Image: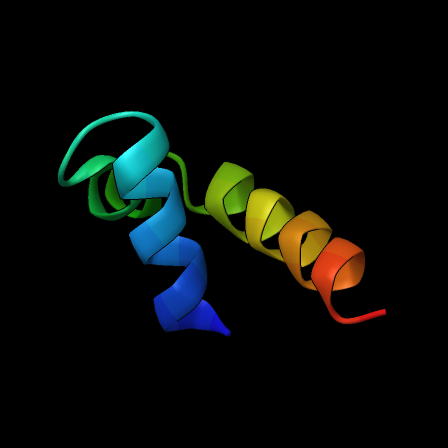
Length: 42
């Protein structure tokens, strides 16, 4: 699921967005990943 999240967010914003978010705002990255997982795991 993590790989899909990274791929989609990079396509929505820009290449490297997910990696940059994880470095600059780890809590925000985890929050967005959790929301993504909750929404698409149902």
